[in-house]
Image (cartoon, rainbow, N blue to C red):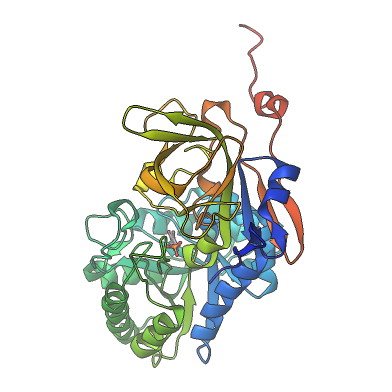
Length: 421
Ligand SMILES: *Cc1c(COP(=O)(O)O)cnc(C)c1O
């Protein structure tokens, strides 16, 4: 459930009309609902009630400072995958002991940054990375808390580009090598083993793959404990999917996911961590865009928008489906027409939808891409020198711009022409 509903013929974000935001800020623009973000965070908190747990929001899904700050106030931890995300989490007021550092290619600079600023744990993904972290930590005279991300060789049955738990993926170490790798980690002077980490992919729409992975992690917990490791924390990753369209996929509910966690690892006496991103952020945001032209082609009609693949890349990159709805509520049972919905970028890939039945729309009309809160703004670029898309946060009847649209001057000012040219 989200808070983007029609009221008196206008699509609202909570109690603010989206056309008012478009008039004030211009388009394209991302609009997030605070109430929806908090509701989704709360679903996880409720699902894990009774377990010693920490919900670490996946910063890569939606990394605006205001959003991180909103969630941090609720007690959320953060899962970061770069020095930049670490800096954002800290700037949003998240204490180091609630920040988890994931990712396959952490550099020594990033390790140093996190060790200096404070960190809950590093999720390590390879032996070379493990040795590097031990060296960095020892050099600083500290000990880094670590888990090793194990790859359980489970098929997440999601899109190939966001599946991470199969043995052919670049992520983690093969679970059958875990004992060997943990033995080395325990022997390294700069590391302290605190648990196990697993993350098998994103946009999972069934619980089966989670169950397989978590059972393997539970078995591994027993094995590693018998080897003498103090496994006191399990990081179970993120990945729970969301409905992108009302008609087809029906992903599991957080409550059922929580029950699965309790069933598989609840009796191990561990602290449980999860790293959800999409389920918290996805349906909490829309991309608002305006129709520039309706172009009638041969056999197909194009809806040309001012939003493009540089603002929302998911359809081009993952063949993702987003519901596209007019901001002015269409008449119930009114006529529809099939549109190819496209942006102005000079690539055929700049297509959001093909032959999408939509109500009659004209130049100047506003549309909203639903479920665009996660992996939307964070993946935006300035391709075609289109200024980075701005972001707005709504709470109740007020809204604030939480990222400004750069001017052309600002966009250009980051470049420089060498003196010798
Ligand atoms: C991307 C990612 C997540 C978040 O995945 P969602 O599908 O957005 O929940 C969590 N943990 C790690 C390590 C990730 O790479």
